[in-house]
Image 1 (cartoon, helix red, strand yellow):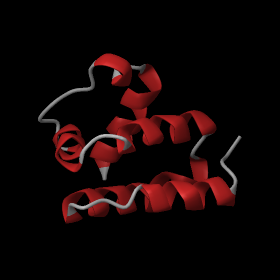
Image 2 (cartoon, helix red, strand yellow):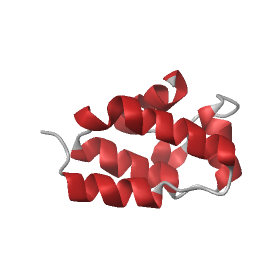
Image 3 (tube, rainbow, N blue to C red):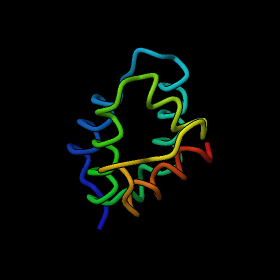
Image 4 (cartoon, rainbow, N blue to C red):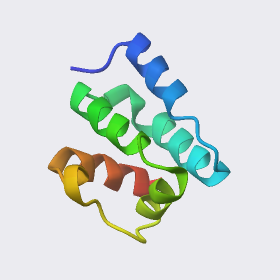
Length: 85
């Protein structure tokens, strides 16, 4: 089941970052994957978006890998999608 437009709008708003690099990656991700996002994906993105800009960029660029509460299959799946764009 895909995510309704209200949830998707809220997610896009919460995804706004201080680093342009993060914004570009996230915008490309939404352009490519938003039609097929699930609620599990939304939850995973919320967890990623709770990170600081620099920590998030390190994950996007594969400088680091998810650890702790982020080391979950769906978070890793979404992160792999983010790394594809």
